[in-house]
Image (cartoon, rainbow over all chains, first blue to last red; front, side, top):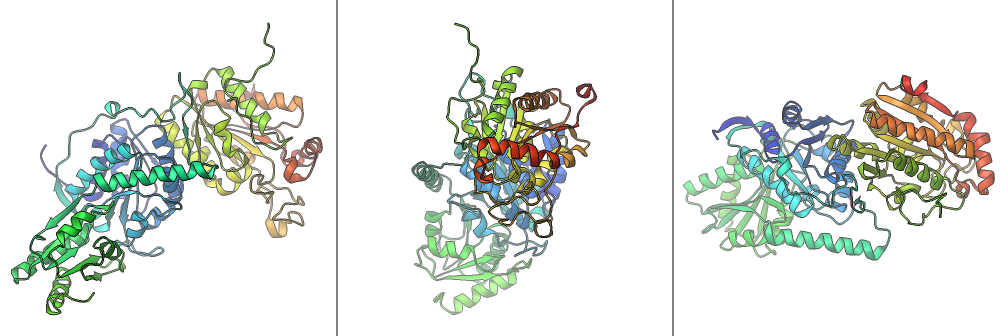
Length: 356
Length: 249
């Protein structure tokens, strides 16, 4: 199939349809609105349902209903809206339902701004709602990767019966790049979901539920969830390492920030500095073995984020504090510039790469 | 041997957790009888709320969901949009439907979602310990209104059926009671109509059932039924608020 030039938010919508998603429930919020706009037109063309809910809260509970009924279903929002969805996401994780949630992050906290941000990292990777649960979190850095990860997101959601989040940001949602889409999956040909609530025809009733009043049963349920997350850590980590083999300084960033980092690495290399980039693609599970391998030569690590320091905590933790990890972040909708990152790299080289 | 009475197939053999004298059991049975009579048990998906009937998924012998507090109509919307040919019902209390879930029920009705809602109004939060509900009557005491509901402080009880009956998307809205056998019979008729309206894809349908809570009202089961009749019905008048023409006739 030929490449087409598309905006990130719209490409995500088409990718969801190609992945067999026929149901979308959402509420308008900037900067992700092109995604619902696209699906409002496109879903009815393929026999699907687009429904604008009365609130983010209702939208995520519609997702709970549709996911429990066996459908591939998605919702999308941006930071303040995703906060509102957290109650429902906890229920979806607790009831072990597959679905995809897109967060095109903007600046926060509170109403924040409508400019791109990455300050929902903790909310995305640590749970976000109440209780011990995790989302599988995928962080694309290009429009093509958004398309590719959307297919993966639905596959992983079904494999683990777990909500999957695509954690983008306003930049990725708004920018345009040429993309190639995969063939259309036929939702009718996807594997059956015998656990789904679709009417108890000739079988015992199925119950979609996250309530366990017996504490031993609830503990067992939690242990089962944890076992899933352990399996994800063993099987699903994804990352990109760029010039890390001989790198003295390794940058770490995801999404839009990683694109800035890549340009900074290229410029630093031109100046003779052995810089590299490690880009986690799965933020949960975090690619621990991969970041350790990428940083094995490093004298210093620099985490670059559009937040005041969230990813950096996981970088330090997963490197087990063996390498000094520095931080450079912008917030409020400000995007790090290549020049600023290169100058930070130069400073670290001058300091001899020591002391975090 | 002739069978003269049996448990509806749409109820499981489970023993319910409801307090002695609580009318949830009667309402469960009416819903189950209607599902049996319409022959849709294997096509039905029910949604339990948060509140006293949180465990309703153990009692209805159909595919069931447990929803977050107040969100049952949104969950029902998601299910019905995926399976428009299935029968979807929510079973909700007054705190669930008329307080925390007000937006969800109003918009499900506004959209004309082809679902059936059973709204059990006993004017109190039962499960959490007798707190004031959005439907608690003026002067009625509750653990969070120990001197009785005072409109100056806590405002006025909400009449949900009257509100929802104003919505073009609502096809059938009725208020019934279960305080005596005659009213139980009328309640069943209304519940059956509310399911038929869904089967005929006419729009949103809700039956509000006035129900007693002897435990949190501090009354014997019999006195509670009398209190319901004497106090709730004057504020929450029984009857069909809205119905399609052919149902009214």
